[in-house]
Length: 106
Image 1 (tube, helix red, strand yellow):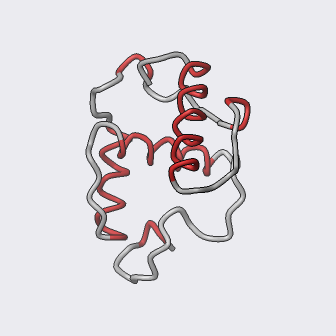
Image 2: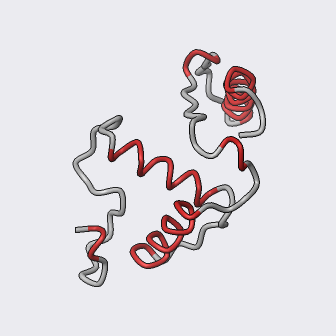
């Protein structure tokens, strides 16, 4: 992220509420409802990372999904790191493919 987490939370809340309104939903969220994990590569914003490259390769190999190497791949790398720390409960591996050619997913 290039901005402080509090600023991002407020902006995400605003965007989510605007989208809900356009879709005809009455739900509202506040900045306190938004969770931002800003501890991943903050010093290297906008620059691909080794962890992002590994996540990019995993998504392509397991799911056939192509991610951009700078932002989305780094987001997936951060999510996988948080899963590894037990921050989220899941009954599925982070890569949900059942393809036998994907040993990282089993």
